[in-house]
Length: 350
Image (cartoon, rainbow, N blue to C red; front, side):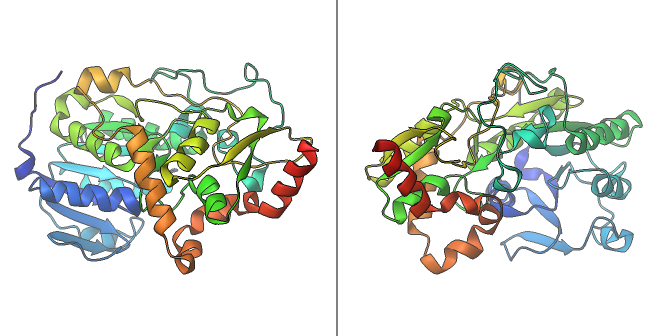
């Protein structure tokens, strides 16, 4: 395990576009450690001890508001595609001790790997061994396929090679936890709240989609900040220690809620069930580099993380469900035809 290289209580950190639950949790964690935190981007609310610089990375005048001082590290939440990262780079050239790009698991696959009601959620009955999909498990050296994510990474490595700053990429698995608005767990919790006692599992419920609890993501980022020499020039996969199947996740949601939920495998020919976890190819990340290089161990077990997430969703007031989980409803709202699903389950049982 690498030795600590920085005094975190003296760290000055710039967070670029720190939105969502992860941005909030990381801000709070860094402040608890005593770091001086500056956030740049759309203002998301007041947090004690954090200076917000409102603006957009494509506008040089906004970027100037960050100030002239150096930063021990910058964490880029907006590393998607070419325009944003390229515009952000000149503003911090030569002023960052380590640039941390929060990348994505999608770099190994493509949009087809992302379950999505709008796109059909993947082909029915697809052969897991065919097609241009990521292998299982997926090491950092695996072939990269997703254009936007790969372009963002290539841009970072090019700037590092030009001497702009040391850099690393953390490829995060899909996030979950209280406050995550793209809450895949609502697929099961929404049914429990609607009083459903049965739930359809597409293609048997054996699909695998690696996940990452928000607190564990924060811990991995802090480990990277604490070991800048070891992470410079390298990419790291970040995910939970255990990858559960779709069926296990749905059963875990019911158990955490203290409710009974009968899980029924249902062929797509009977009912074309959509699920945000039902990827057509397994998505499992190899975490060996993260563990061996940084001595990473997750602070929150996946079972506990799931239980906290389910409790949060169960307690969410009804009037807040749609606005709070808007990204989820935009992608997978059509998966919540409870009446149609129950009718299909009745017909299948008959």
